[in-house]
Image (cartoon, rainbow, N blue to C red; front, side, top):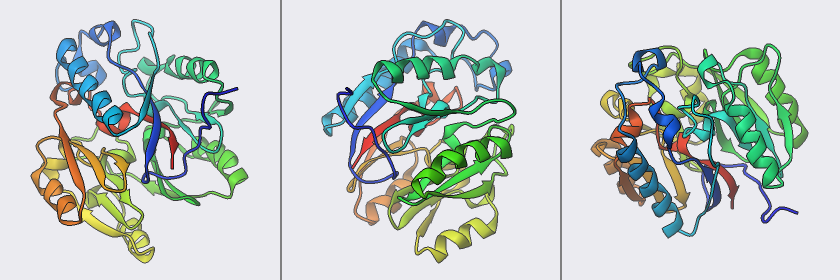
Length: 289
């Protein structure tokens, strides 16, 4: 039997256990950052320090942290574990990466979850494309899924077949992209829930109908400015009802969260961010109260 009972149906509430992957030797396999859509070549030693600081922060708040373990040398983006799959009631859904350079991350995550006795409910296959960085829980019965190059209609259909089992509705959100978009944008880079009735949103990246949909549900919106969206501020981690971890260098969003009573923890991820990912992408929640 598993050491714990995996189950997630929220972006908020107390985070109890997660899966991460510290960047290792595979992170240095990239020689042409443009081919990977990266903003330069991150320094492995510094990126590992940034990642370790995140782990220490989570553990200091009582979160149990599990490691993915060693990956293949070519899987340079393995640190962004959340992109590859997500946990729901008692098991996991594994996506299918849109970019060929990430092929193989799905198998590695599957193997690790099986080792942890976490059932695999579904693996997106055939013509489906689905990256879990596009899935954001709005509440226990509703998720928003971003539709872009990284997640297509068939991928969403396959995920829907699993979530229907738990009476979880899906709201599809076309993503226009970030201010430096290559079409690879995840919803988590432009939208995130930080409380049951509060969200961070970069409104230029989504249809006005989605903002109206949130407001109709009584969700207050903190608008993220362009510069801070580029700093991946929406890709934050809610640790508990009072604590949010965000990337450093985002004073407008930080102040807005503090005004609403949050303890905001800034983490420097300048090296990790060169790989075009944020804090949220570094963590797969396994249990959240």
